[in-house]
Image (cartoon, rainbow, N blue to C red; front, side, top):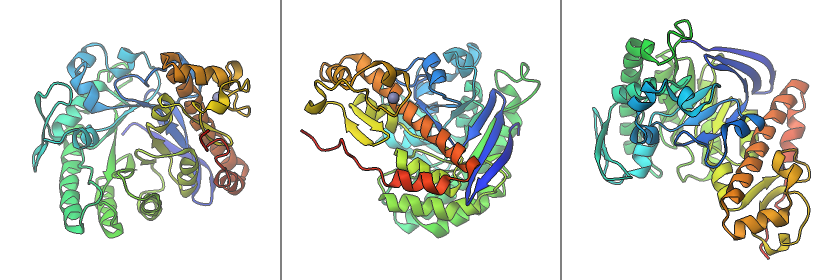
Length: 385
Ligand SMILES: [Zn+2]
């Protein structure tokens, strides 16, 4: 273990903390932009820094297929390859293996799957996922798990959970004996990556409890709640997060994978979630959907054709400082790549600023006010023309 987690302030169940990682500190609660294939689509690294990105997420599955983990290892690891000197987290590849592959075959040993790119055959076991993640060299790595689909029967969710628990143990065992193989081990005075566990168990609170309890026995430096945002109603997401969080150690970071909308990340942070990631801000941006301080805005709407206002007058990002709604609409309508890029920068700014105001509110004791303001947001720009 090479992270330290220090809580500075709490407000109800929420906490403001610092996670010290090999590549620097991360102030939590934090939102992590998703850099799928070593890039947050259309956003250069200097701009990610400018909007306040503290930690990036990389997808093991995509990087393993292209350009390949051994190539990245030879290039000094993911930090050097993508020129990002700050913290990085990689997922285990499990989620993509399960979501992008119809022809996968799961055995107790691992998963056989075909590349979604060229149909070539591959095999991921817990050991291999760890080997790939060690080669990539992120500050935080994740155990290999099976993401239980939704809906899943109790029997199916229980079987999946048993597999995930065995895989977590195997991931940890492999990690402990190979942690010194990370590309930057020598350069960082023998510090290592940090392996997080993942709670599964479908939508069944008692399975989630069993998963959390068995995972905590592994004594990992942080814990994630996985298997959410897989198509379940939002109320289930909320209930699972709320009932699982108290089962995880309060002195370690708690990460909910793959959530959410701006209002949701504020709610989850208020429940006590420290870390979140999601493709929503960038994916929505490429479709012309902007998140603003007043709600959601479809920039393709005809009403913005001659609107000289910034996308969000309350936003201080570089996009809102310079460009008009009319121009962003034009870029969206003509499908100019710059449109998706600018929209992404604005949406990421909103997400990162939102988490910054959550941290400030925890510090000042004003989190309840922030929560009710966020909940009260209306989609003033939503109706289509
Ligand atoms: Zn903006």
